[in-house]
Image (tube, rainbow, N blue to C red; front, top):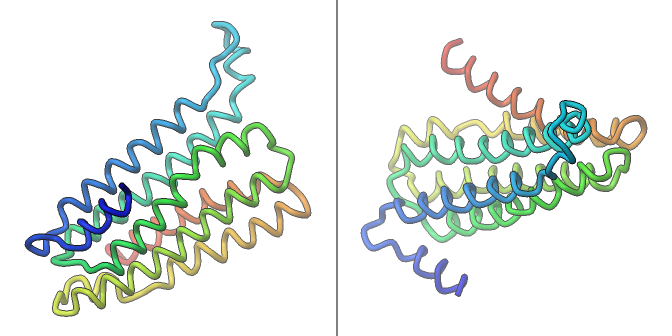
Length: 203
């Protein structure tokens, strides 16, 4: 069934991207919904009970920002894209597969905040999505070479490389000192990406 869906996406009737954009929106909406459903209910109606699950809320907030950043990036890019090919579809499709693991990894981290492995896997998932984003950038440029605005907008991959380095540093800190430093590094790498984008536009 999934193969049939992707095979149809690879043959857009008029070269438009609307169906694929709708697919991205739907997947991300489902991922965020599942993350929310994984937050445990407080044992009672007191502030103390809510504070007992504060870590779950914090990790959820980071995961929401990760998902939102992926959606925001694709939303901005596809506003300039005129056409896509199978390489674009599959690179984003694979990235969304790894993004769909975020709900599980969010719960894994929240239940094991002092363990290295859950946070490491969370960070690894983040890095894989970032690497696939770089592949997607190259695929988009190759599939729409006549689109000058797109070529200029996607000319620099350095910000995404910076986010990967940031999370790798977080992994080192997480291994030796504090595992949740990896999740924090994911958050700050996104903030860094936003700041770089802001200063490029207004600098």
